[in-house]
Image 1: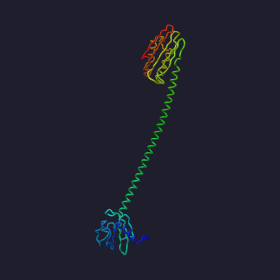
Image 2 (image 1 turned 90 degrees about the vertical axis):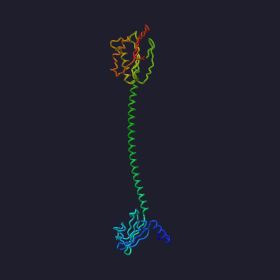
Image 3 (image 1 turned 180 degrees about the horizontal axis):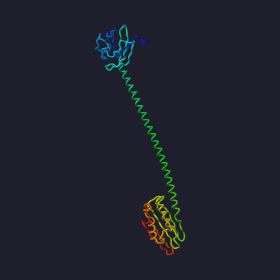
Image 4 (image 1 turned 45 degrees about the horizontal axis):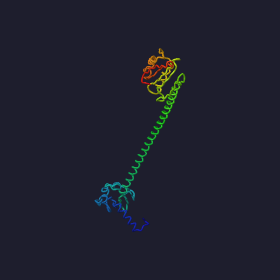
Length: 294
């Protein structure tokens, strides 16, 4: 300001003083109000009584006068009317001069900045908490994904083992089927089961020189259980191990099988069967069927 021409400096000072509603008070050595001036009405101080004790009229001066040090500046002092002032106090020739400059706008702006800073702090804290929760949720999802992948791998391994077992069982069933014949007559076949492993099976063999047995078997259901039962029945027929039954008589064969393979003894599984005995010499076929037609 000292570098400015006096007229310009004075104009700036007047502008600043007008903007900050300058008011002044003069207090004598007896602490009585000796004079006032400026924008007293702005602060609600226009009814002050000259010659009366200043601290009793101005509560914000209690304990402040007489001054312990001079000059004294108290920033952003809150007045009863809601204004905030910078209070300048200076002792001069036995009197105390008190200047009030309105800084309410600056105080409000500062409070607004502080409020915004506080809100930004809260926002950052919420953002940090949200990020922590998202990180925890992401970690939980990754862990769940790893568990799912491990379970999928275990299921795939179990499926592969089961599939290999089914393939081996299916290959075994095919291996025990009879080979095609060309003498004394042709016997050929094609085996196309409805499932990889089921209860479908067949066989044929010579009972003696004059009797040729052939049979078609279908156990209910699909899978290992029906397949095991069909193989068991096939081996029983092929081995001729039906006690008390003449393999040349289909009726006796059926009666014997019905006694051996009771549903309650074989997991409620049942089978249908076509069984025939062919005599090439007489070109005679005797057969029986139980259950649905083969």
